[in-house]
Length: 351
Image (cartoon, rainbow, N blue to C red; front, side):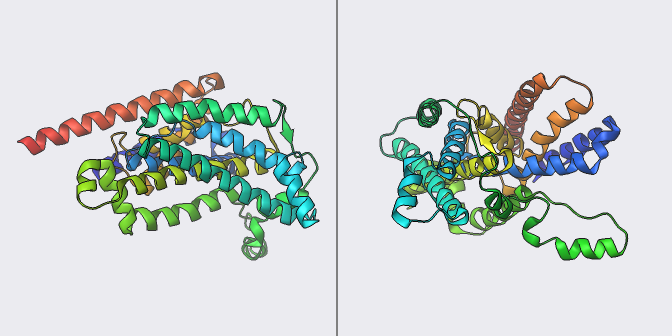
């Protein structure tokens, strides 16, 4: 609890500095863009955070994002054999049906990748760092091979699909009654990025799973002491496998959201260093790299800090080329803080 309070206070300080850094930082447009990025990167931080809590690590998140985004764009453009096969078998080119098929295919791909990672870690007993580091290269290479190393953009195709799945202005029509009421009162209308709403739904599901179910307690037990959890009757391999599947599936889902927002995917670049964002967001939120510690609320706060920091440096006029430097420094600070708090706690318990 003390760690979470400290992180939350740090968030308030960063946000306060941001508001006073530049008048543009207080604009509705900047807050909208921040909320959109928090929603997007919160998805992969949530997956990485739950995996870290269970004692695992995944360095292939960014490459899974790139592969998923590329595959999703190719299916919608009819350039993938799985997309062409679906059209031939069903005889339909309805963009909503094809879009649903593309989403399901990409999510299944993410689940398969997570299964491969998890099985190599749990059954073959290869270190997670090595497995996912190799995956970082392998999945990126597959994406580049599938797309012939060319950008896959949606262009003007599938406008209805994008409007249905990813329309910030309409928010599936949920905000229309609210905005009509605000307009009648001559008040500014509300605009919420759809990525943030999706992230909040995922957060609610993660809270139930991690904090209010026995399976979440298994994650904490495995992360704290895997051997003790195994001797206590917990199917450790099964739940570690589940953690890897959840992480890769959320990375694949991020790839879908990325294409819906950016309208294209570049197999050699999309998702690069995003594993840094995912792990940094979780660690900044209080997830210990040793496993067994962390919370969903902490991951949300850590992701928010991660997005606010580059925006703060930008508003201060610092070059955007230092964005990764800022994120890396924040990640190092979080790791140092975790080590200091651990030693402090150990010292107090010894006394």
